Amino acid sequence: MSQVVILSSQSIFAEGVAARLKQSLDGQSLVIIDTREPDALRRVIAAHPTAVILDVSDSETEQSCSLGTLLDALPALTLIRLDPAQDHVQVVISEQRTVHQVQDLMQVIKAA
Amino acid sequence: MKILVADDHSLFRDGLVSLLESAGFEVVGQVGDGRSAVETALVLRPDIVLLDAGMPDCNGLEALRQLRAQWPEAGVVILTGAEDDAELFEAVEAGARGYLSKSLKADEFIDMLRGLGRGEAALTRHSTARLLAAFARPNHRQGHFGNGLTEREVELLRLLADGRSNKDIALTLSLSENTVKYHIKNILQKLDVHNRTEAAAHAIRIGLVRTNSSHAN
Image (cartoon, rainbow over all chains, first blue to last red; front, side, top):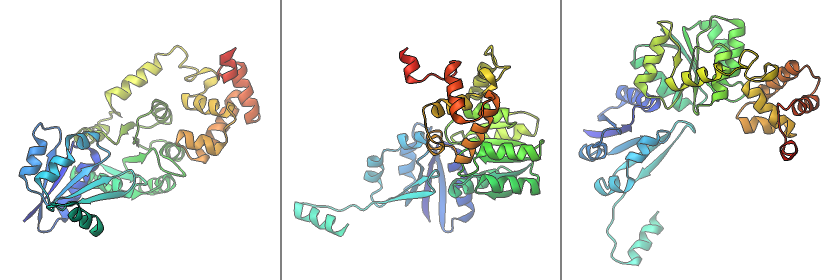
């Protein structure tokens, strides 16, 4: 069963989305991690989620979550940034490759 | 407790509705603009109407006034994306039972709403302190400023005296043009003048509004 993590400092919006997702997610489990806990980022990584959801209107959440650390630990992660003020989401899909030469890097760029 | 939710951002509204339902509230309706909020509230008569302050066309404060004019007992809580003293005072003056930030923690928000059922106001300690400070001003009985103008009306008058158009004022203060017109109508009445030019001149003359040139003098 794949895991979805919601990183929230218990904002009205993030908690509401979590409540709705709990009713709707099929074949996936949902973990809510409070960003105010000192080991929040470690707990996200330990959960091995396939997707992490963040509320961009919640500054505490953004500050507590280092994108670099997350992507290093979870190379195939899908990061979903929810923006309730704009009714849109930003989806960052991570992929890890090994490159030895600039030419390899060029192929990655061309494929993007 | 029956609740009607009005917010133009459907993603936020959906999250808010599911939070309220998971906390045991009955959400009897949800709408995306102030006009629909007034119409729906008058039909459904919920215990609480949650109005987003920043909806286009008819914003939360405008909807609050319209609703209270037709249903004086309506219980309204304004939800705001960015807390603002002028907006807080206006909401309370217009009869809101609460003024809450959307960035409030979910458990605190739910506690505030439950408190409404016990006759409490839905205000944070910070908002309460701001209200008390405003109330403690010597001239509060005549309104926040001379001539009975509210803080928002003085703010708008400053822009008006600066020669700004309604559209420009609306953009600057994040209001609809209808709300700006509503405020200007009130300003003209309170200052007992006939048009915006007279209002601006009157305001400068009595020192209610200072222009750049009057600062220089």
